[in-house]
Image (tube, rainbow over all chains, first blue to last red):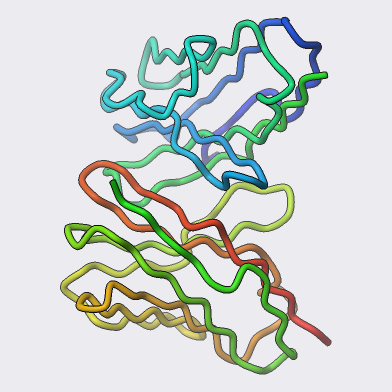
Length: 112
Length: 110
């Protein structure tokens, strides 16, 4: 199994630009999670999906953030417009249940 | 909501010695407590977990203990090795959310 796949691995962009992060979960997993990791705030849950349906997006910081899961094998996290404070590592994770989550390698986002 | 506190934030131990990381949680309804290891440049990986109906669980050199009354749980690594150097996260699950501690950076000294 290839595990959770995220792209790109690194993204550098300028303030105001749109950023799209992509995730392919492990085949057969019903849950997909998006997390943000920073030194100050640690690992924060942004949003999660169950069977492609968004269940809880209370962690999404602002309207500038949006996430979609058009099918069971693909999800995107979009930031528009991006700001320097959005710089962080963004992780996607998937699982059969909420318990055992498998994380991807992350996308390191730098907004200049 | 759930709050997870983790101590210490940094821990250095001599190779071969034991390491202990401690966590507390606030919500008595939490019932699942995983531990994740994160190596540099990688995503967190689950290394062991414990459920609220169990007091202790072991897997080779790693053990976790849970005190539901005190709302404490701990990770114990014995006979530490260089490859144990990483950041370790404790977490607690309440309903459909897993809340993570801030992490402990473990250094194994030669």
